[in-house]
Amino acid sequence: MPYEPNAKPPVNLRWAPHDPIEIAAMVRRLAETTGGCISIMLNTVRRVQEVAEAFRNDPFWQTDFVNDPNSILIPGSIIVLHSRFTQRTRASREQVITRSMGKAAVERRERPYLVVVISSQIAEQSLDIDFDFMITDLAPIDLLLQRMGREFRFWMTDRPIGCDVPTLWIIRPDGMEDTSLPASFDEYETIYDRWTLLRSQLVVNDRITDGTPIVAPDDISTLTDLVYDEDISEREFLSGMAHVSHRPHWEHELDEARKKWVNVRTKHGLMAEMSMVDFVEDPRQLLEAFSAIEDDQKACTRIVGRSVIIVLLHRINGKLYTHSGGEKPVNIDDIDDPMTRSMIVRSSFRIVEKSGYRDVVDFLMGPEKGIGIDDKVPLLPESWKSDYVLRNYRLVELTDGSFDMASKGGPPVTVTWDPFIGFASYDRRKGRRI
Image: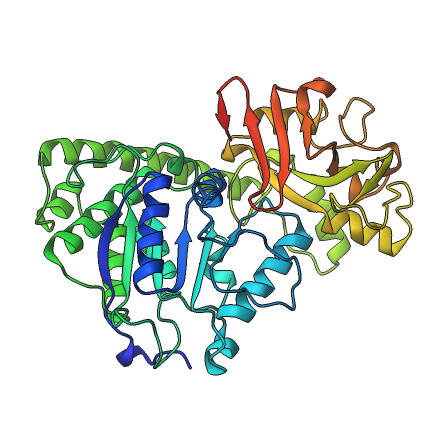
């Protein structure tokens, strides 16, 4: 059963290396000395895939995942989970992870003695599972605490030897040699704002340097309130930090980051006001009022910019399949058939422009900005154009596991499907994965 609040053990904090190869070496040492269920939780899909690649060529690990939701991970398994797996694959992986490390597995004492889950932040809340070790990218303090909640989540008497007290290993941002100086968060700032990242870095570094663990639940509200407190100046905030170098520099960085954060929050507030509609009893009238709002003014549960849903199918001998091995072919034009429609939807996932896909999203949305019924919209099958749901989807046909966007007039981006790391994209202009 989950720990009672007063029985939850304190969690030690430590810095971990940023380089994927060094992370893999660190995990290999843990595996050889203690074993256990290990989580590596990262801020972006690109980071997840880069770190997973560092494990791929080490024969110590089992990277061949059996896509069966009723299975349990075998010892030594590496499993990757993020938002760029198709709905079918992602659901299957989540079920396998829960069956292997969820409450029922703990109670039956069936947890594998060694498993590594490399995931993006989608695992923060969606999975009720327990880890012995956790390694995570630096993130806003409330999200770090949320991730920490997956470590020692359930009460157990048979954790690995040497794993008496949980430790949260926090990965240094790239290039951060001195943890007492402001970090350059680069792509993290496409997801989280710099102000909360900087404040969280200060709080984490103080705890690590002092050797002070986090005690739940007492420290959770204290640390969260401290980081997000707008009523104290940056100078006041810094006065409470014991391990800070170059305080004037820190104060300047925090002040600038706060200004940007306030501007963005103000903009989002205006967007919310613009998307407000009068309340009516008839839901049809409410939908009509909402539909009348411009797409870029509609309220979102999470503002991440524009996005496109991709359907990923494999072309084999002139036919389309949901799997590269080819099972039952999919007739993409038979959209009135419930089974076909389900296969199409479950072969989909969403990409967003803020994750580095701006050019790809621009291309796939076409000239009508998301209406999805114009003949000029790329990768939109004719039979989907009049369908209220499928007209928002884009079909990517993989040949031998890859597809070149440029072949259809798009950006120089090659997309691939890899059963181990999922959907990946390589931007030839940038010379790297996105």
